[in-house]
Image (cartoon, rainbow, N blue to C red; front, top):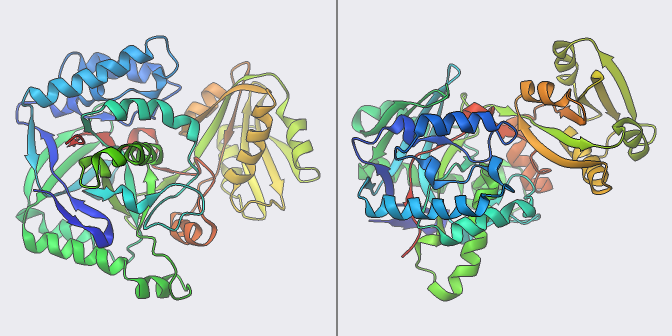
Length: 440
């Protein structure tokens, strides 16, 4: 039975997980917006999954967007949802699920819950309880909206952050694991680590979680924490990963609610809540890769930032990464990878606070002029080094931002530039596993 806590925009939802007998190693696949320039990854996933029950059949990997069979794939997704719901492969859990993900020698912990989309606004300048952390690319929403409008169930890769330095919400569950009923425990595919889940069925533990979240949302404590004036709108949840998926859910809900009323499952979205202070959570930069480049980017950058730009050749990828790590708010260091080699791009006395802001402002202007055919957003240095050095392509490698600055930046400055950071590298992204019914 679903339980709503409107003050913190949280619902203890009915979560669907595969029944015993379903191969979870094949069931769980990585977020659809990963490896978008590496179709070989998705071909390997398809070969491994085959015809087995899998969330692969419930999503449209973005590598296939714009392909001739895109609409056919969309219909196959809806058909698979209908088949899985009617086929009895799910068990129902009416509790929070405590999640532990082990990858790369790190453990990252989270809590599966549903959030109220009425308390979420992804527009710039939002003061809602749930906010986007970076700019939303509106052009990326239509394909997702088409699928969600027809969808019977959702399976999220959305990671939503809380700023809980005292570790009061999620971390206490570590010492209580022996009291929690295991839900799943298995190795993820493609070398992406291990995943464990435990249902929080004890009322006392559930109440402790809710009380801790209510404390983070207390208006007086919130203003003291961030040194704000009394009455400042509380920010409890900042969307870390999956911003476009949550924005899709919000967009569909806004269209749907006049005809279905406010008591409808589509009003909520299933997410994993994580603490930004989790030692296993690292912020990685999201790099830029341009295809079909028709002009030399160097004079264009110098013209866009007159007197501020310099280029310095680097002899190796290692040297370039070392220089990028020295980036500061007064001099943005960005790696430029092209067929002619590696260069350090420096933008001195920048107007933007973050290097990604300086670069994106230029790229928006430059690509709109027709200088390049396509821009992709890439996780991981190696892909940029490999693809940026090919003819007709260039890559930009960006420095990482400090995760501790995220909430303060959103509260004071609003959303970051789009695709400003990533919570981990591509293979560390959230895997689809849990589902939730979103039709009445």
